Amino acid sequence: MIEKYADNVPLWSFQKLLPCKEISHFISTRNGGFSKPPYNSLNLGFHVGDNPETVLENRQRLATALGIPSDNFTTVRQVHGGNVVTVKKPGGALHYDMAVPETDAMITDVPNICLMVLQADCVPMLFFDAEKKAIGASHAGWKGTLSKIAQNTVRALQERFNCLPKDIYVGIGPSIGPCCYEVGAEIISKITSNSDVYEGYMGAVISENKGFFNLWEANKRQLMQMGIPEKNIEVAQICTRCNHDRFFSYRYQQKETGRFGAGIILNT
Ligand SMILES: [Zn+2]
Image 1: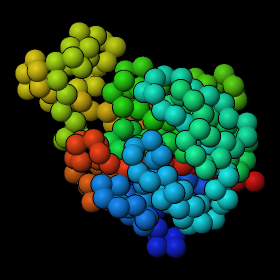
Image 2: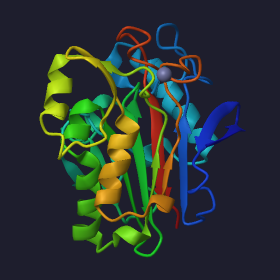
Image 3: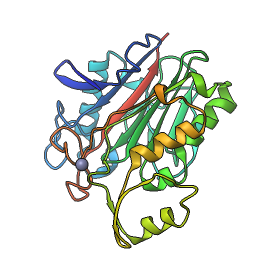
């Protein structure tokens, strides 16, 4: 990924998406905003206990850095499921109720809508098909990954916009890595007892009760199973827990923390 500053707000980009002039995209960090600890400082999430007025200031600051009106954001009330919605007009970003309910992924072919997912360890994924001019954004923690939200997003792009997997590019953003994502018996048994379905999902397995989930590899494999060429997929390889000075990490901050954004816009 490449880091740039816009109005003192650090914004990261995927190398594979950066040359695509049909879109704008970004990953924000925890820096450049107004929130106080433990939400310092560019917290974009209304639902985490931060002062809503400060969150709004942060979202406005991000919009200014991106050069878009904040009304163009569309966010979702993420529920760690497998559902994908098609967005036809921007939902806005002024308060939590404006977020699309009960979904973890969005797609659109309408220009100027900024599809933005929020996370603090979960995996953000940004999708772009230059042929069909369609985009998507999804969010996967362990539940979303086992619900195959990445594949559901690709399927939705195929069914609703006639996208072909060979034309779809995907960026898998900063999120908790296989170095740090320790999981217990419940998740290990779900994965290892279905090893034909979830092959490659576990990193190191120490015991029945301790192992490391590799969310990056799991989601990358899902995309490749759908026919997306490996050369079209960029994994940031940036662990949010290891890089907790740059990104919000739910694990590192023991649940009380902010959310950073991953967004994509189809340009006119
Ligand atoms: Zn790590």
